[in-house]
Image 1 (spheres, one colour):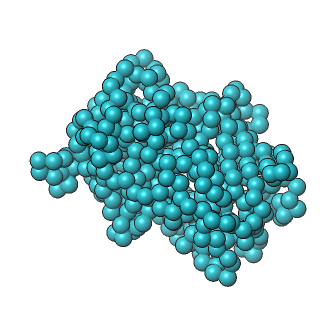
Image 2 (cartoon, rainbow over the protein chains, first blue to last red; image 1 turned 30 degrees about the horizontal axis):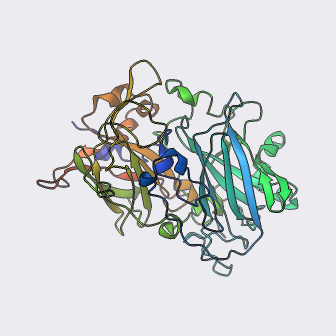
Image 3 (cartoon, helix red, strand yellow; image 1 turned 90 degrees about the vertical axis):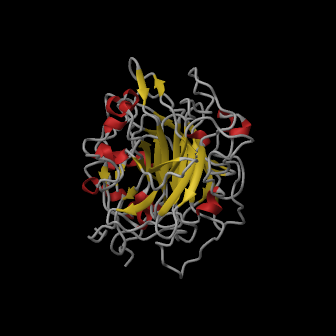
Length: 222
Length: 232
């Protein structure tokens, strides 16, 4: 008997598979890492002939409320070697703490029509990624808690069978002390989730991701 | 208050991050236990305006250049569903694949098979109100890789879905039912049996178009709604 994707007895979640090393012409679109305005940020046109760079139509962007920031970092493997074929996705609230999603029904909070809150960046040959975005506001947590400003992060790449999920918090923000998710992370590992201020003009943060090893980043089951 | 929507967690068919037979997972998978957290609004929301975000749909991968690509023309169709059989409408499905000879247009793919100037292998479709999707392409060829001696990847199409929330994200690979390489592929084998077969499409004469293209059906199942509240 055929036993495949269409077999009722096998119905259930489609399993994850790696993005492999050759996703650059299929996933990271032009400007995907610039959540505030159109640019080439996030794409790797150097990895394909120009006539095959089909994802070069960046969406139009307007003015976004909030403090503009850059987040730069590198992805490292167990040996501390940079990972040049990874891809990072981010998802965040706007400056008012509102998610641009039908699942966030809090209409009393302002939406920015031009701010989707979602971005995608390939890493470069040094394993580095770079996002331009705005500092997110605070969103509610479980019960009556309020989360500290944070950005959800997905890590993909060759050798990653499925996405790894982590979060970017901002070092020095007093709200971190009362964040209900950080409270679930052992104190000694929380530093791996903190973006550190690297420059003030433009305001820029550093957030490295260690897939394994002494400084392994905290990854979440969510 | 805001804890109304939650999504199911991984089921038993999801692969682990560390699969020794797929060599590059060894130095790239975490060793610490994942920290389990409740789903907050961060995890239960996700982008929906995919066109404003990424650009327009591209559903026919055989019509992106001056001529027709080489290879077996195929149509892949199916539905995007959640675990409760509910359709997932208006969700974007991103596609990328090798050409009919098994070669990617990617500059780092250096194996000795011909490139096809008429085939990029990237597309993007969106599910309709019933969760249905369809795209036209050519069947991707198998190709060798350096994971182990005489290693060959089965022909596959990469698929990427956002779904309604950060928690429903999925990237997978679709395989073909008549491909003997699936059985000896460490990446497919990262998924335990029998769930591995959820990655294998079915040939379908109904989707097949006479004198035009073979049809394959592949339903994509995202995490369902969680019955229990997502709060503490």
